[in-house]
Image 1: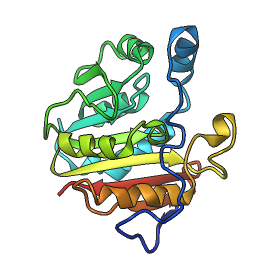
Image 2: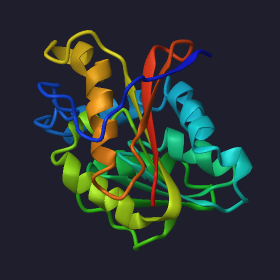
Image 3: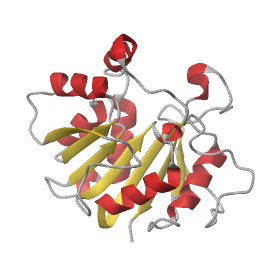
Length: 219
């Protein structure tokens, strides 16, 4: 894996940078189409989850550490974090995603599923040591409010982990537009500093499917 820290991060987003949530208008998942999507998301998602576990440094944290998965979908990343020793709350706005998660991982202990959005997390203040959002920030409706919520549910010293697939053009149609360009990651990292976090660190993970990540620690 090749991790390249982003150079010259500032405390404010670069002027003219595309917004990190350029797909905020996505209608979400429901009905038969949502079920098909949820079932399809059960495969091919472990790569990003393992990267997030590494970035969260879960192996260095005590067993039972508390983690919130924002936009958990059908729960692949949440259950891998649970298998690594974490107590996990998975949050998703789509009821169909949570139904699939509850069914697929019904025998696992330490996993809980709650319906909610990044802008209004159904989690107590300071509950978590880790909050992560994997390939979902580009769908957030309100980045500032969502970052404030992430900080609220994190204990001091907790870590926010965000990953997005690196893309060439956020205006592209279909799946090609789902992800971030590098300047979007930088813009998001800079915004972290305005919501009770250290300025975010941006990395490229070229051996992990060309993924961009942002990590920031709560003051």
